[in-house]
Amino acid sequence: MKRKTAYLGLLLAFALILSYVEVLIPFQIGIPGVKLGLANLAVVLCLYLFGWREALFLTAGKALLSGLLFGNLFMILYSFTGAVVSAAVMAGLKASGGFHLPVVSAAGGVAHNMGQLLVAALVVKTYGVFYYMPALILAGLLTGILIGMVCSLVLPYIRRISVFEERL
Image 1 (cartoon, rainbow, N blue to C red):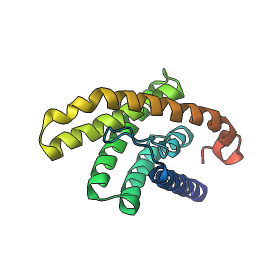
Image 2 (image 1 turned 30 degrees about the vertical axis):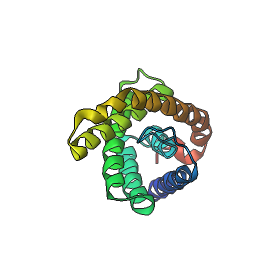
Image 3 (image 1 turned 90 degrees about the vertical axis):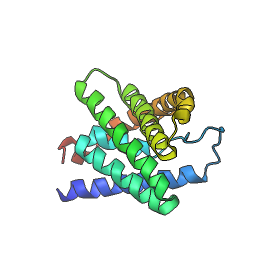
């Protein structure tokens, strides 16, 4: 149990570092809300190493802490909602057993953006924000596939560590 807590702490720290790196990268395409989603690498790894409960805890902690450290209250609201929706979708797809990791990650990227879009519609009280939906779906797919591919390359090496074979 102590090892599991330590590894979850490391994954949270990894997610926060990736969130900070993402803040430093000048990635602007002119569409609000489009980010690389680097920190989701830690969430996807957590989902495949530990399970959905831990991934949900990690993604909620990442959203809250990265918002406090690098953003504001609205960023926390958007990020938290998107993160929880994303984790739930990825957990469901992984549990079904019928999808490869990059597909699960891509669905999570799209779900994250759709969760944020719903919050934006509620906050600004207009459905006009849904004009961004096609661009956000495409961005979620592309970044989700990229994160999923990186995760599928890294995951076998992490699983070789004996502590993960025991499922902690």
